[in-house]
Structure formats: structure tokens, C-alpha cells
Length: 305
Image (tube, rainbow, N blue to C red):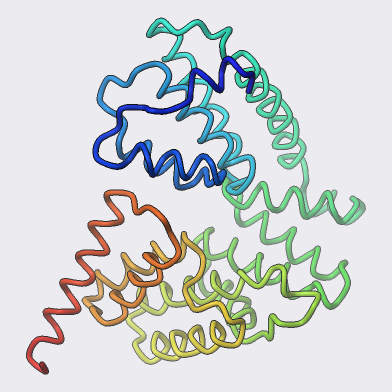
């Protein structure tokens, strides 16, 4: 961003309550996920153009630095927000570097997406391993069954110490493809693995995903014995990794919804506490779920008090 653009987007922004201070803290710390959630909550129905530009900036930065799987939709959303700002009268020359950077990244991502689309299991046999993994990661959202094939192929080709990561990814992709029976043994193996090994530690978030998806499968199958076993195993893994389960933000939200729907107040309140401990700001909808979990837990514990 240029100096003029930084001045354009500088506070105060006129957000309600103490949200200006919260937003300033998030931006100062480059916590773009929090800034994004806060802006989406607080944006008025007819936002001033500079807030649209700020929202475009934090949406792009959050995807570019953290939520990389969201990069293409984030670029498209950012460009649409900049277009709205221009329609509202903002001279886009002030933020031309941002628009050009978003357009550049979108063009690069489009090329990579098209390359991933061409990666079939047959082509993958002869392709460099890093290209196979790149394609598999990109296809996971749009073609999860093919992504699973590529991950399993990568597991056969990579160093045996790294193979469990790819098999876990294959299980996650198969779950997304609706092939729960095929996904289950891969996810169970990931949940049982000791992720403290040096070759695995950096990717140990896979155990969080494996546990969450297995819990969803057990709930869907009404298999309470499996649900209890998976939950206990996930908590034990969290203790072993010194990363209390659930650690991943997306999994925290999935499990909170699942536990509330099950009427499991104690576990829902526990996940609510994990959510509050891991974030500076709760989006309005998530804060309502956290409150619902606490109410459910109090209601269920009341007769024993």
C-alpha cells in the first residue's frame, strides 16, 4: 500500500462501541482474520468507500498469509469491493497498488488452478512430486475424490516418514467427497499416529482434522461408542501434542455446532472455552453459539447442583 492509501485507510473508522480500538489492534498486529471478522460484523448497510477498501485489503491479506485455500475467492471478493468503492465515488488511483497486486495474484492463481485441473493420476505418475501435491491440495475443494487419488499416489512416492501426512490428506478429501467408509481407516490411522516425530510435527494439525471428521461420521451413524472413543483419543492426542483439542479454528466451530445439535452441553461449553481462549474477537454469530453452549451446559448441570 502507498502512503496515501495507508492514510486513506487509517482510523478512526467510526465503528460502534470499542470496535475502532479492536480493529486498530488487529491491524497493528497484522491479525487479518480478526480484522476481517470484526469488519464483516460492524460494516453498516451503506458503508463508506474507505471501509470497503479496508475490507478488501484485510480479506486479501488474510487469504494471502493464512487461509491460502481461500485465495482465489478472496481475490474476486476484494476486486468486487474495490469496484463498489469506485462506484461510491472513491478515486481508485489512491489504492491502485492494492488492486494491481490482487489482480496479479488472481492471474497467478488461475494459472495454477488450470494446471491442477490437468493433473490426472496417470499424469501424476511421471510428474514431480511437488507438482502432484500442489495439484492435490488445489483439487481438494472442487474434485476431492481425484485429490484423494493424488494424495495416495504421493504417499507411495514420498519418503516413508512423510507418507502418513499424505494418507491423512487423502482421508480428509474422501470425507469431503462423501466416501466416509473409505475415509474412515485413513482418518483413524491419522488419529492414532504419534505426530511428535520431527518429520510429522509441522503437519500435526492433521490429527485435529482427523478427530473432527471421525466425530462427525460417528454422529451421523449414531454410533455413540465410536463417538466416545474418538473424543477420548482426540483429547489424549491434544495433551500429547500440548495443543488442547480442538485447536484449529475451523474445527472448533464445526464441533461447537455439532455438540449443540447433540445437546451435549458439557462438551459444547468446553469447546466454547477453547474458542474464547484462542481468539481476540468473536464474530457475532459465533458469540451467539458460545452463549448457547453455556446456557445448555448450565441447564443440564442445574439438577445436580
